[in-house]
Image 1 (tube, rainbow, N blue to C red):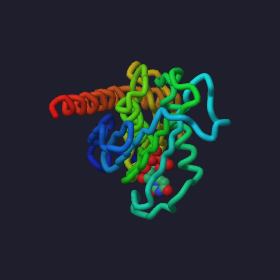
Image 2 (tube, protein in one colour):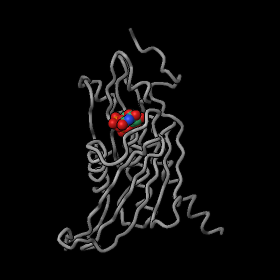
Image 3 (cartoon, rainbow, N blue to C red):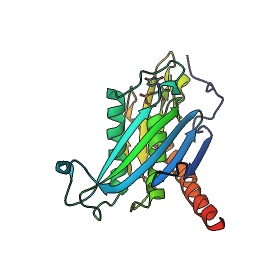
Image 4 (cartoon, rainbow, N blue to C red):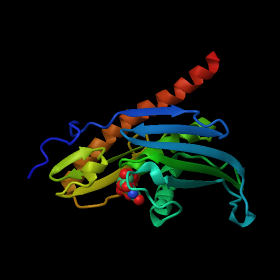
Length: 234
Ligand code: UDP
């Protein structure tokens, strides 16, 4: 059976409603909130600051340390709290997705810590976390050559779609989830694939991701500009 209409009636290339804001945590050096549909990510940046223990330091440049966590009550079936293989993996891919646009050469022996909390989850949390983290790093004033935007694309039953929600991820005829992150030039910094797609389907999905990320980039930049407009007016 074909997946004729999306469960929430979106077009195949339509993302859920997005909201983004920076400066949401006063004590952090930089912070941001990124919401897409019912998925909400908060990112807080601390640093650059001296890295301890010292043997972890890199005398040539600062290091980026990301910590992703989904809180227990972010999902209907309470998630077991504490670290798990999933959060370790997502923390690592988040670091790798963000590093290409960061310039940490000015900060030898230092660390930039990024804490990402998913306070509500309905699929696409790693992408929401990357979007929030990228904005929080810019808000912290960490030197960056660009922003990173991220969106999940994939296949639900026989249709290529953007921004799968949890109901779609759990479709009885199967779903393929492809989280993608890229800079504003469309250069990919993260591509994961959980499921099966043909080569041509993957290319179509990547086209959707490119369009989605460029829309997200505009929203991220607007949130940053709005914050500084507000600061000037205060
Ligand atoms: N999820 C859940 N419990 C868990 C992990 C995930 O309910 O312990 C849900 C949550 O809505 C999440 C979705 O499954 O967004 C998909 O998780 P996945 O690991 O594919 O990563 P994500 O799509 O969130 O980046």
